[in-house]
Each structure stands twice: as structure tokens, then as C-alpha cells.
Length: 340
Ligand code: H2U
Ligand code: ZN
Image (cartoon, rainbow, N blue to C red; front, side, top):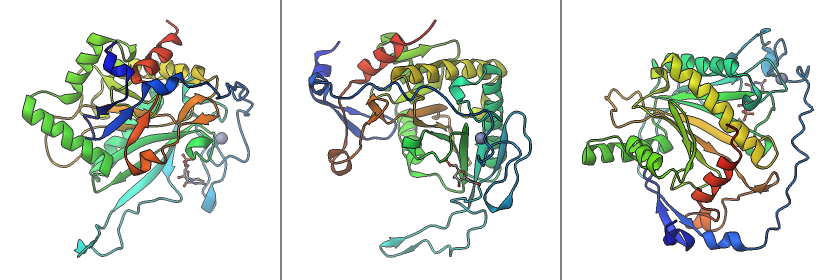
């Protein structure tokens, strides 16, 4: 390994233009984090009469869920975005700059089974979750510029309910994170006449150092510029702009890769691994967006055990992101847990 990687250095995030401080020597400090495995047993019932996502149950505001058999989606009863913005469209008032925003928020149930997580679901049922992502993405993109598919998993991530579910927020603006990625991918394309994330993927496939899973159509890797200890990037091997463009074969492979990867995560600290994950693809801004490559980010908060979380505080809040374990070490730890 390059000796630079053994000393403090900063790495550049090609997608966002931000730097991260890597401090590998700090992993030499004594291991005081407890390794706790007691979280791993899953005692949840298949059906919980008090769960607002289980089939047939009532939600806030009096809505009743159908007795769904596979997946189910509904408009969030507490949506952060509303379809018809009531606020004035006045774009700025000196230093007090605003924009009106229209949008919608949906909740998507991955399974009628209260006791499962995506990692525990059968591959054929994960395919149905992908089908629902694709369906909602397609529908919402007819009306909105950006469709954000995501999952918040685990109490530590603020997830309010263990029933396997995700969310989709769609709006008539491109939010800050995808806007940065759009900008950096576009600049790279203009300068190199090639797609940033495909060039990056090829580099990673050659070096293998940060690869976790290299499957037929999809790769999971720890980005060179990862901020969270076990942050990962999932991306297709061919140039695909958005999730609606994946073929049936790619979808089936994606379901298998997702299951394999999420099981590796669960095994790492012997706990149902918490994370926020979400998809990024080309926005609906009327442009060809040839510089875009579809990908999913996984941002897990855990650092050393089921209960020891990486805090983004202090230096991170005031200066820039920092990590101890290197992305290469994280990739190796995850690779070792892979079952072939
Ligand atoms: P989490 O994925 O962060 O737990 O969010 C679940 C969402 O479900 C949350 O945004 C919504 C909340 O507004 N919700 C309903 O729409 N109806 C309910 O009856 C409870 C929760
Ligand atoms: Zn439930």
C-alpha cells in the first residue's frame, strides 16, 4: 500500500468537491469499544397490531393500510413537501433568499412481514422492492425534477419503525447533494469526454483494493473519499443514467448483490446494521445528462461495534470530515465477511 496512506492525509471527493481528513495512525490507539452481539437476535413478530405499516392496520389520520401481499406505498401522512406550494414565489429579498417548492413524500413498505429487513428478504421479493422503486421513480419524474429514493434503517438513524420500509421524496428543484454531484460529473465530462464514475469504477476494478463485491452487473466498493467508516457506493458496470433504465437481468443481479452486501453489513458487528441509503441518478432538468452514472450511497454510522457510532462533531462540524480507519481497511474487513 502506498505509504502516504499510513500518515495523515486529505482525500478529495470527486463527486462533491469536498475534502476528507484521513488519520490512519489513530487506529493504533487502544480498542476500548465494546463488541456487543446481543442486538442480533430478532424477536419481532411477523405481524404487529400496533405497527402503522403492517397490512390491515390504521395509520395516523385514520387511513387504513390494505392487506398488501408484497409491497405497498402511500403518501406520507406528515409530508415535508406539499404538491401545491402556498408560499409566494418571490425569489429573494436581499440577503433573505428563498424559493417556493412543490413536491410530495411517499412511504414504501418493502414487505408485509414486520420481522424482516431488506437483508433477510428473499431475492425474488427484493426484486419487487426494486420494481416499486422503478415504478414510483417513473411516475414522480413526470412531474418533478428530482426523485429521492432512500431508506433510513435503525433507531440510531432516527428510523421510527422497524417494519422494513423506505421513503421517496420528489420535488421541483435539485437538492444540494445531487446538485454538487451534477456539477462535478458535468465538469469532468466536459474536460475528459468520459463519465466520471465509469472511469473511477474502472480504476477501482483494476486496483481491487477498495472493492467489496464485484458481480456480473454491479459493484460495491468503499469510495477512496469515503467519509463514514463503512460508507459504500453501489454502481452498475455499464453506463446507466437512471434506475428506470436497468434491464430485467440487471435488476435480478441487483437484488442478489443488495442481499449479499447487506448481509455482510449485518455480520460486521453482529447487529442489524443501521444506515441511510439512497439512489442518485440523472435529474429531470430537460438536459441529456450524459455525464451522469446511476449509483446508490450507503452511509452507516457505526464505527467499532453495534453501539459505538462515529460522531460527525467538533472538527467535522467546524472544519471538515475526518476518518480513522482507511477506506482500504474498511473494504478488507467487509470482504473477509463475504460468503461465496
Ligand atoms: P422513518 O423511515 O424515518 O421511520 O419515517 C417513517 C415515515 O412514516 C415518517 O416520515 C410517516 C412519518 O411521517 N408516517 C406516516 O406517514 N403515517 C403514520 O401513520 C406514521 C408515520
Ligand atoms: Zn409492521
